[in-house]
Image (cartoon, rainbow, N blue to C red):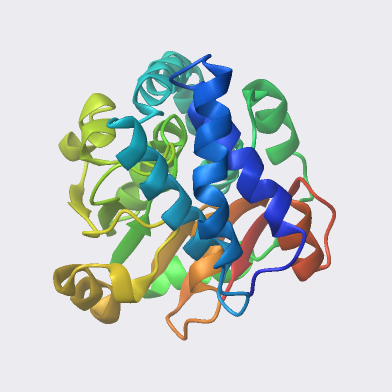
Length: 281
């Protein structure tokens, strides 16, 4: 997808959200907003918004000297781990555990502090487990899982990673080898190896990083090792709106699990904001 004029207010909003994670100094916030305006002005409109937001968050981290989202990521990982036993039981009691785990993975995508300043996890779980979601390619997903032995699972946000663990467990229970992918370094509230370790994911499956600090998965900015993994993958599970923005044109057999949380992406999809999707490429 491309960048639209409606993305520009969101670029400013993301900057403000990031700054307020670390400082209440309005003077510093104002100076920082003015410093990133040239980054926004230079946005390549033919590329996904994730390109510009990556540049924005790099500038913010460099200016502040630390990761604005580190503490809130840790908090939401802990919060989601507290929910895990109940959610795990819900999957086990389900008539179709893989379906339930996939829906819960979509529910977890509500934890996104690039867009929201607060989240309703319980409400998201309830909506995700309703019989119908906006785009539901689960039958194709189930068939693809049955046809493959290995899956590359692109993780998205902290907190959400615990919901992903439920789906990874079910994929492994069906005999599949899953390799989970985190970001190479901090960006927004996206998961890094630190988050994977906090929630115990390396104890469950192999975890690797993509060598990048980009929003989503911008393949040309990832490591050669990750690109080789991506190329040879039989099936890719892609979590989150950023990964959809950056990978929706790929020919790789991919299933996108996410919530369309902004008006621009929703309009591009022909859906209302907040729609839930399990969408095949």
